[in-house]
Image (tube, rainbow, N blue to C red; front, side):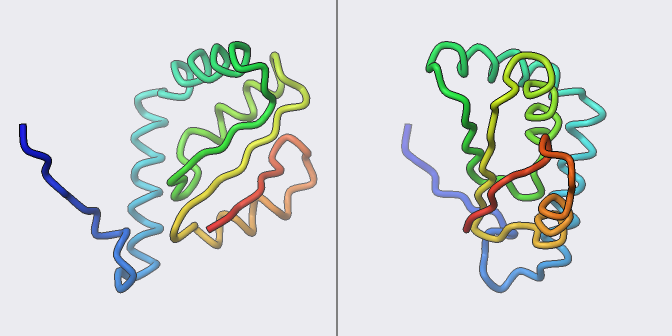
Length: 113
């Protein structure tokens, strides 16, 4: 099968930030409706144990998606020393500032571009 190169409009430099942020919020709403964090928590927990690590690197994070809930659940239940870095070409700056201002250590993340 021949490879097809596709793209996402929100990954293009000229795409307006407010639309990009709204699109990532919509994705988060769908994750919450489908409760994907429950299944993802099981999978990520298994990988953390298998790799003997306490750090998650979430690539193409957008607005954080379900990984914020997964992180908080795992940190609370099995991995008290867990850390997570969210990375995105165009991170949701409003969300990043909101997370960085939290006093609760379970919501401390390192954002990078």
